Image (cartoon, rainbow, N blue to C red; front, side, top):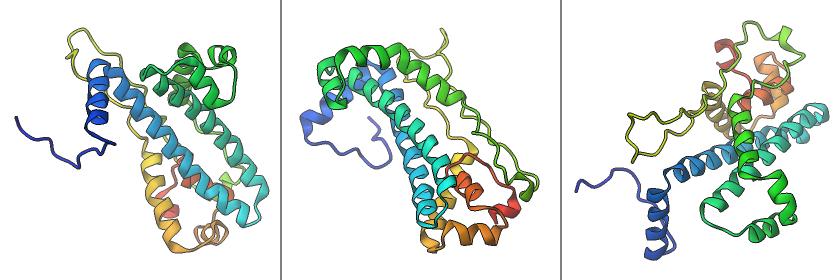
Length: 218
């Protein structure tokens, strides 16, 4: 058997690793749900960085705009984590207790159907409202929404897991720019001044909501 390439996963023990592999093999959709949860939490983490910078730089209105989006990220993350728990056969009482809500509220607001609708809305969600400073940034390009996972066809390999949603170009660029911003030591205000855009627009670039022109990116 040819060994798989890449860094091996770490588990709490052999029994833990065996149980994890058994779960993913018997339920291929579990792998997709896991990948989606990781994607949501990574996007939420990227949004937290510019939100912190805006609060530190004294830009409360721009920070509040980011806070609205951050709350939506957290709602989507709760739905994704609840689905992860259900994939692992956790009891509804335990899930509701972890969220500090009643089992009835869990079944109403975070049912499997409601979570699927939340995921679909997120994958189809267009960028948030256009920035008021758009006139300061010529030739802005809107990012394409991340494609929704395709339904498995009858001719496809039924043993293989469905493909995970691909990251959008804006999200890929945002990860790189956020890393460069953190290592630069600059505030969003000074960075925006250098790029001739407002801190609010700069924060949207860092979270992947806007795909800037090459001039602004450089």
